[in-house]
Image (tube, rainbow, N blue to C red):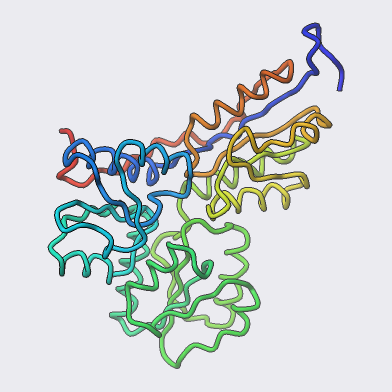
Length: 319
């Protein structure tokens, strides 16, 4: 890589657009912040509010206490449910104890919950496309009784699933690969022509937009860095999309300290994006780390300008 007059090697850094926080994540974080303002510390949060260590640590410093189950919440303190959604049993447990609870479930996840319940009421067996063990999948499956949903993770699952006799419907996790999910849906609709589809696509706008942006990015760069957490489904999918779009060296990083600079230095043009749970301050820190090491030229790709906003729960709005 040629050196510039600053004696630093030259580097082009191109940012995907859009990247970083989505409206659902922003709403969830605001719910915890506003709850702390209204009720004072501590405010309890069941599970990580979103999948990002920096966000969780900042909220913990403000007075949020993260727990695994509602049973760990004291009787006199509020509890927030994470953006990924929870099974029906969780608010039922909170109600049984008289707890003050706030639901930070992303409205687009809630939409999947509502449709899942509707399918069950209409006697349809539901084929849920998603990743086993992911909090969103656990929450969606927990909207209906055991046995009402069959989980489909792969194309092989779609070919082999043997649902009970009767009408069927399918739903999907909101953060899946758009292309992979389309392939699975194609198999299901071929096998079960009368299967009921969602009224509107379940994969959320933010997932779709970020995957399209990284697909465009991957076609023009030597390496793609995706800021996100290992347990973040949407961030992991961005790495996969980048690789499938022609950039084989695509990597997930949590923050700037995770970057393998010796390997980055082999390239002239690096792409940068961030999953929907990654805050803007980490993006800026990564850019600053590049500026310390390279004579840097930064470009932002043309892409979708997102202006989606979700209302906060009525009791937390500052109208």
